[in-house]
Picture 1 (cartoon, rainbow, N blue to C red):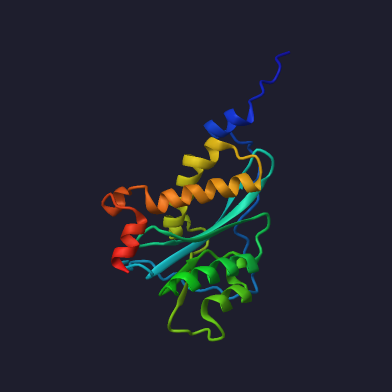
Picture 2 (cartoon, rainbow, N blue to C red):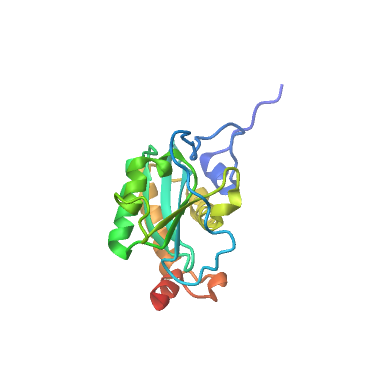
Length: 209
């Protein structure tokens, strides 16, 4: 009888080996929450703070996992805010958005998926205040089953996972936090993006703001 070969966590991380089993879901809809239409189809995005996208992704560690939420400015690809958590609470998402608003102001359009965190009352009120028709910010939500609707934040998830997370197999949440902080700093201020004419997101955001 052949013995099962065991791979080290380091090897699994480097080649992205994963068990074929369900992972924690990051998008769970709440049927009683209001859904908003998708506003980005056919839209020319020509300036910073015109459209922000926010999403949550699952981040594996050597022991356990965390959730990473981030906001990206679509025009410049700059990460405007992010946070780690071991749960996906609406209040956590609202705090990330509120902090980004305090630092950079509100975008014209804020796009998310239809997850219960983003359709919750606490999150919607953070976006528009007490006025659901606040003209300073319009809410956009991806269509159900349309993975390409939030393509910009999805591209960032792929970059950070393949360039950093899978290569480092972080030990714990604190180690992971420092790794992500360093990656996002480099991504925003040092990494040249072909789609931006070989400029950094920080340069594109600041020059056009």
